[in-house]
Image 1 (cartoon, rainbow, N blue to C red):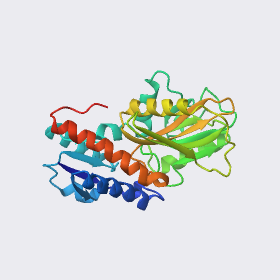
Image 2: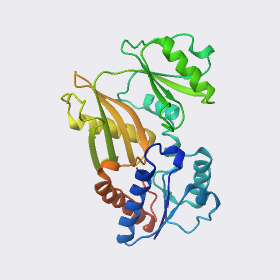
Image 3: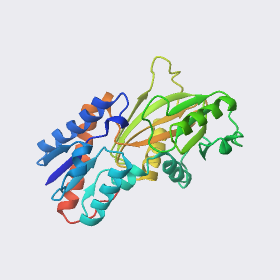
Length: 283
């Protein structure tokens, strides 16, 4: 059995260039121990490569044109990908929010998707935000520090919209700020492995919440966009409510890389066994 890993584009790993590469390398190392022939490629090498003959493709790449190519390869060859191209595309923010809206029971902050033009942003969203708004580019999650920006009032928010438009970002999400502790979570499955930590332990208020509720919300979000290897952000409020902020395909797993590599490799071996047995994998 052969597995191909495709590294993430440098521009899509702001501040995490080495972490993103290291976790994929660690997973490939685990797979090689588990009786799997492995190969790693850069995104640029994937653009030119003949990738026939692989039983499994493990893509961290996020660029639209590469995902379109991968989707075509999946459709024509039937190769298994974790996560599949459509699922990675489903993590683009506007698509992710559409999936969230169709998922019963999933809790996320009031959000509106708009164009970045001045005409589209003359008035604030109807839902209001006494604590301010978060403005987020509508496609990939982050390529620089200016892709997710807090605005305390609508005049400031309108300026952010104009800055987005100047960078040729077409769509944005406007989201109500939720007071609480910001949490990072990682998972494999859903249902196999889950962990979490505070983004900034020094400033966290350590508001009480139910761990099973956090895991359930994270897994609802993962199922909404159909990812098996995932991470994301959540807010826990003073009232104990949990809001999912984002879900991502193949995060860096930097703080838990060794454990995550074992758990991800275990999931990938399950996929390879399904391929060997002639069964289509199920999420």
